[in-house]
Length: 256
Image 1 (cartoon, rainbow, N blue to C red):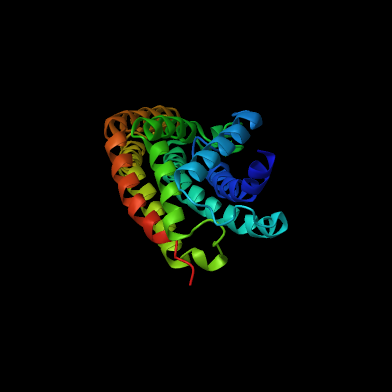
Image 2: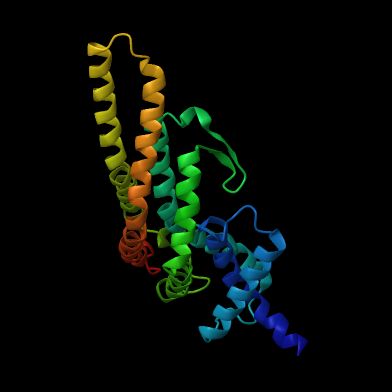
C-alpha cells in the first residue's frame, strides 16, 4: 500500500506544481484574503483529481530528485496560464484607473488588502464586480478546463521554457490592454464633454466657482456612466473570456 503511494508521489507533485502556478495567479484562486491552508488543500485536491482523471502517469515510480528538477518548469506553465486568465480581471482594473483619473478619484486611492496594492474606488468597484461576473459566467470552470487541456499539449513533466509561445502571450496582453481602453472610452468621452462645458461656463460666467461645480459634475456624470455600463459588463466579459479561451489554446506549444 505504502509502496504504491510513494511511487505515485512524484507524478502527483508535478501535477500540483502546475496547479499551484495557476492558483497563484488566476483570479479568485489567488485572492489574498483566502486562508493559505484552504489554497494548499485546494491545489492538492485539484492535482489529485487531474492525476486520477487523466490516466496513466509516466512519472509513477520515478526518481523524486528528477521530479524536483522538473517542478519549476511545471510551475512556470501554470503561472503563465493563471496570469493570462488574471489579465481578464486586470482589464477592469486598468479601465477603473482610467476612469478614476478622469473623475478625479485618483487622489482617493488607498491600499486594498484584497489585491495587495493601492487602488482607487472605481478600480475596487470594477474589480469586485468583475470577480462576481467571472464566477457567474463560469469563469472558474473555464480555468479548470484550460488547465486540464494544457496536459494534452504539454504532458506532465514535459514542460520547458519553449512550451510557452511568447508571441501569442504578448498579443494577448496588448489585446486586453486595448479592451480596457475600449471599456473606459465612453466615460472618457463624457468627461471630455464635461470639461468642455465647464470651460465654456468659465468663459461666459467668470464669477462661477468652477472648482466646486466641476467636482460635483465630474463625479456625478462619471458615476452615471459607470451605472449605465454595468448591465452590459457581463456580456462584455463573457465575450472577452470566449476570445481569451481561443488565445489560451494557442499559448502552449507541444514539446519538440
